[in-house]
Image (tube, rainbow, N blue to C red):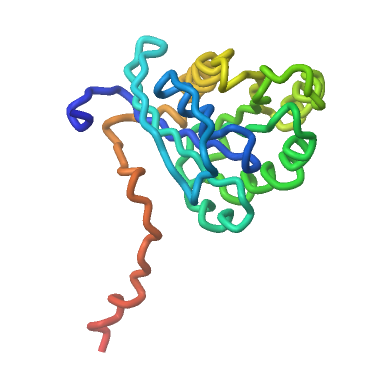
Length: 208
């Protein structure tokens, strides 16, 4: 059935951040309206969600990357072609916030292929307000410094989860270069991203 669903644009969204901040749960909360405590993602996983926003039918391919360092080299190629990148931290764990500037923002600079890519900062687990160690003000300031959208949410209670994706996608829809990339007339199969093979093996075969 999936192959026959009509849509105007295909957008690739990527979630990054430390292991355990709730990226997989956040995606699941948006795509299936359920909450589960999930085991850590191995490598990369993705979910697809169809939404209608701004009068357009959209297919969202939401990529969930592993936060553990040993997987980070595997995920660099998955930044390619992403129109939106969501950086997630846990408001109850300070190091997940400081790692955004120490690690994840640098990863974006290194691997993102589109300078117009929309970035969003998400502080997750606001349902644990009594355990909060990162203030909303700090999140706002970080987002301002890095030119990100910002929201706080709870993947568990679903507070602000849909709003986060809607804000991000609406911003992509307002960005002409990203819109042309996501146009269904230019559909690239982003589900089969393999490194491009070099032509070196075939070129020059007849030069002598």
